[in-house]
Image (cartoon, rainbow, N blue to C red):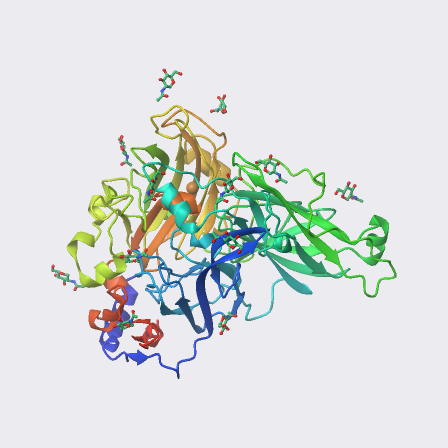
Length: 603
Ligand SMILES: *[C@@H]1O[C@H](CO)[C@@H](O)[C@H](O)[C@H]1NC(C)=O
Ligand SMILES: *[C@@H]1O[C@H](CO)[C@@H](O)[C@H](O)[C@H]1NC(C)=O
Ligand SMILES: *[C@@H]1O[C@H](CO)[C@@H](O)[C@H](O)[C@H]1NC(C)=O
Ligand SMILES: *[C@@H]1O[C@H](CO)[C@@H](O)[C@H](O)[C@H]1NC(C)=O
Ligand SMILES: *[C@@H]1O[C@H](CO)[C@@H](O)[C@H](O)[C@H]1NC(C)=O
Ligand SMILES: *[C@@H]1O[C@H](CO)[C@@H](O)[C@H](O)[C@H]1NC(C)=O
Ligand SMILES: *[C@@H]1O[C@H](CO)[C@@H](O)[C@H](O)[C@H]1NC(C)=O
Ligand SMILES: *[C@@H]1O[C@H](CO)[C@@H](O)[C@H](O)[C@H]1NC(C)=O
Ligand SMILES: *[C@@H]1O[C@H](CO)[C@@H](O)[C@H](O)[C@H]1NC(C)=O
Ligand SMILES: *[C@@H]1O[C@H](CO)[C@@H](O)[C@H](O)[C@H]1NC(C)=O
Ligand SMILES: *[C@@H]1O[C@H](CO)[C@@H](O)[C@H](O)[C@H]1NC(C)=O
Ligand SMILES: *[C@@H]1O[C@H](CO)[C@@H](O)[C@H](O)[C@H]1NC(C)=O
Ligand SMILES: [Cu+2]
């Protein structure tokens, strides 16, 4: 780090020269997204839904690496805040761009817009998605984000298909959020259906048959495709497979290429992505099978209720001398499930995935500090989730008045130099990694931190929830972590090292903490996962469970990586417009936003 010091000093002096740009009509963003809330029908069910450009999922973004990108996000809702998070992409050079309210930015107020300045790191080509980070909005306000390969592709294929999986709910985001944070707790219920690219059929009464139809994925015979799976579910872990197509090969996980890893099915947690090489049948094989339509079956795992949903893989038979078989219906499910999917695999693809290229995995000796995050459901008037005894939420302060989460984004507080919000590294180290004052996890640039995510049986006072366990998909913002794998019971260094032996951990941004059993004793350790992080990118980064219900109920941590001089790359005067809710970096119908371009720092 010492090498950077003279450069930083030079940048700071340069910084004062940054221009304030008015983003008037002459400013053309690379992409524009409009967030609205409308009563629309999907899967046959009407619901007040948060949409992007009028649909869920919203439009797919195809973005280049290593180039500055501006995305303008309009909050067209008259009564709701929103933000946009670029899931899996690190925006270290653009500190206000991560889309996390109360962490890295104020939310975009109703009827305002915000220009996100992004740069996608060289080597980040892969599969991502964007989603709102406010309340339950991400359940539908989301879309695929593909970072295009710049050089030669490591794998060859004829075409690509996106399989973006979300869930359907029958109540609005606000009602679900209100129920979860009320003293009179009201569970959201389980989802009504899985949606593939926005299409599916509700498992509850269909009010609008015109939208109750499954997704059709069109392919041609004798081709290879890259299927990009996006786990955009709010709540459920999902298992899925194709009928008669079991020769899948995973080639990418969370934006990093892997060596080809064969699998017959996929199990995807909320926030995870996989690319899979998929070889289609030849005309001859289709003839033998006697069909050209195949079911793609998808099922809930680790939840009390089971949804079983479908899409259809449909072959075009142009150029094949076969008659197309009678097509499968798109408006009804098969009477009997065509596939028997395996039960939960605790450790799906763990230790199997290998990075395509050396990824600078830090050895055990390089680890400078270990932080254990103990996660647990608690009942203290409210039903909440705690990480090391902290429940951290982004809103609902009127219904959760006793929570002491700061009400101002940490990045703003850091710029304002309010001591009450500056995390104390020393205090945190003495308190399981979390600074009691700010409720953040501080880390120093240059550290190699091992994070142990430890699942615990619920500490609850009623008999029904005591000892309860859930599976949790944990997601890290910022730089990706090296995934060290997982196991049952309580973490132990010996067991972990033994399991790691001879394997080559991959970089991920979301991996599963499994539960191994639905219940255990209260305060009983039941399941762990471990990560290693090279702390190299300064910023305010969230690390949280990606189950939206759990996030709303407090299952989130905020990390402050680097100290003030690492994080505050420009003088306060230049970011004044970011420091107040609705400040002048947020545009509206009558005001063009004014702001500096962090890219002019040349970081
Ligand atoms: C979203 O909608 C706006 C307005 O209709 C349009 O200008 C923009 O191109 C759309 N965005 C994408 C990514 O398609
Ligand atoms: C949404 O619209 C449908 C059809 O017009 C209507 O039946 C339903 O009550 C509306 N739902 C809400 C939540 O407004
Ligand atoms: C929007 O966010 C601001 C700042 O956090 C907050 O004061 C306000 O209550 C929020 N508004 C809504 C409608 O949630
Ligand atoms: C949502 O679905 C559940 C289960 O069928 C039902 O009890 C509830 O009334 C539905 N809520 C709304 C708002 O439709
Ligand atoms: C909390 O729940 C109670 C009972 O269901 C309800 O009357 C109240 O309106 C809810 N509060 C909020 C803020 O939603
Ligand atoms: C629909 O939901 C019910 C109740 O959870 C469940 O028993 C049934 O299997 C579901 N059906 C499908 C097709 O998912
Ligand atoms: C195709 O899949 C069905 C299950 O959907 C199975 O019954 C059948 O045996 C499979 N055919 C072949 C040739 O594998
Ligand atoms: C959490 O609180 C319990 C008591 O309620 C205490 O025993 C435990 O040490 C605390 N854990 C952490 C990590 O602060
Ligand atoms: C923050 O305030 C302290 C005094 O309270 C001062 O010593 C320090 O230089 C300030 N830091 C910045 C980045 O302004
Ligand atoms: C829990 O169960 C025990 C015995 O099964 C019973 O005595 C106790 O009253 C129950 N407590 C609650 C809060 O329901
Ligand atoms: C798993 O849960 C069942 C009840 O759901 C219980 O009987 C059993 O003891 C549990 N096993 C462990 C290892 O906790
Ligand atoms: C539009 O933005 C300007 C500048 O931030 C602000 O003064 C004005 O109140 C805003 N208008 C509305 C309707 O929010
Ligand atoms: Cu969770």
